[in-house]
Length: 279
Length: 294
Image (cartoon, rainbow over all chains, first blue to last red; front, side, top):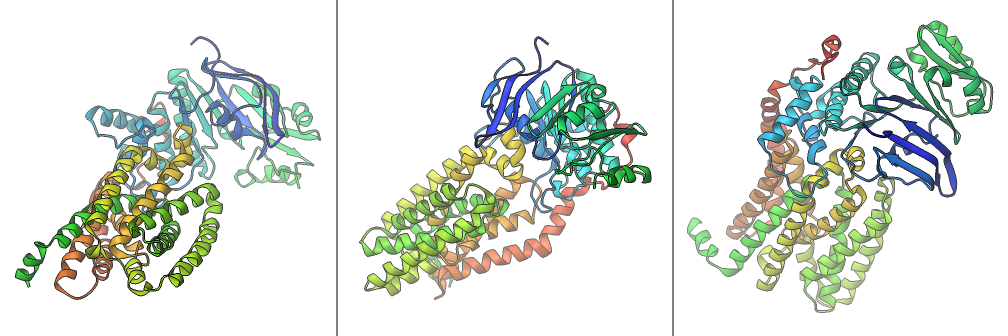
């Protein structure tokens, strides 16, 4: 593929005169698996919205897949955070995936054999065929999230944006969903931007990290960025980055946002003491 | 009684009512699906009551009550849409607009000397009493509303069940919310003709709520919703012809009966049969099989 997948040049995003992040310079080439990290409210989701063409930077320029960001770009797939569907909502997994193909088009929409084949293939791709015809509100969080991946991939995107896709899933389902995204990334050599508050489920896959804190940012490989020095510089206070059992734990004494890379309830006892140092 | 019914069916006013009833039922059936899925019961209620204000104002100034209703609901829809953009604000804005508008309606009624019969008609419905011109007007508005619904149906469905992804895919979620309010305004003005302002929910909630109990397929649910509305309105008109009870009493009873049947008898069986391929836990424990599964 010619040119970078995502390119930010001196990009600044401001709401109501307050800048969310400023002077952002990024270049992600395909195939990258990028983790976007940082405390809540640091503008990680806004970054995805800029790429989706839903929000515009106030200064600088942004290029996505060689063109200016635009609403409804079919070359981008999007997986949101898991929100449960209402139990009685008349909607099957199959319908959710179908909306990923043509839900944005005007009109009523006609069923067709070709459309059905595409939907079936996408569902089979995430191994969700067994429950794709059941009411989606009655499926588990992991099953719903699998169907969301199928929905995002059904249009054969070149770039996949994931906004906290693992939040509120248990550890087992987190691994399954991560593995699905990783398989797609490897098989097609396409780029994934993965917003997460916990880097550990994707730590083995990530080749680039973008860390955003209070309008400042740092980008590079995980080994470059996830160090005590770099993150202390970003947070503007002393921060320790500890590696335990192939996991990364970030602890600091002035993390007013309560940010932690690791969720304490998933940690064995030793990490509990480490994250206890936050408070 | 059957003879009497056949005799009555020959009358113009009955045929008018039936044609208008069919159009109104289709509009209500489709709209109520979205009203239920978008949790907009309160907004429907407000639109209807402020439609009453519009109709009362129209009567006062000697204009057509149907036009008055439509003006009332449209202005209200516009206010709710502009003031209550965020979901959090919506209920409060609806309440604020509703309270003021209804006060205005009371004023119009007080100013009108012969308000009792007219008010009763608007509050409880008069489908068999509308004039030939109004019937044509209702059918016209109904067809326009259905055309608008046909255009927005798919993106509106997307924005309703899955707003985050819909927005990411370029669906104008905010614009559709306002468009749907205006569609609701027309649907309310239509349905008020049959059941009146106070019983509006029987046509704009019950059919959609019933359909949700019958199927997990979105397209089928819309068809069922329209079927419930058609059954209730046409059944109500026919029953009202042979008895002395207002149409709205039968419409509310029939639609409620449909809901009860769907909820407790037919629905659990129907959804159970549709979901036969559902194998709970099929995805659990097969993480290994997933690897390379794309």
